[in-house]
Image (tube, rainbow, N blue to C red):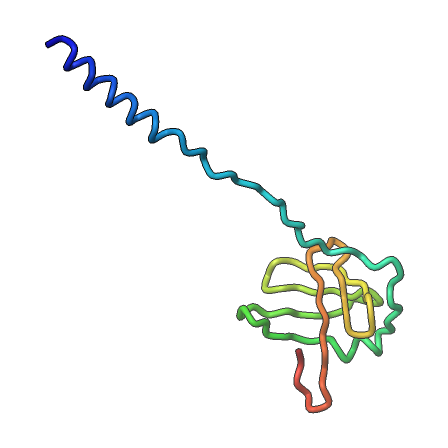
Length: 115
């Protein structure tokens, strides 16, 4: 009689052990490269007359407003009311903030549309 509960206990332990023999799935983490804004090695020299074409306010796709303006020879951009960012031109239609917080390319088409 004592052997019956012992046999039930052993069979229950055997079932539990066989259920745990499956190896856990392997997980591999691959780190993604973080997007970085890099200042150009050589700045595009943009005159204040050239920058005049880009000065003004633009509505961004997320509804915020981008304001481009200059103070003397220095170019600035401000998104919403987040504070000004000093810009350098990286191409005839591209700009990078010196604090590496903004990077933009502005394509002005002949029909007046902007991308």
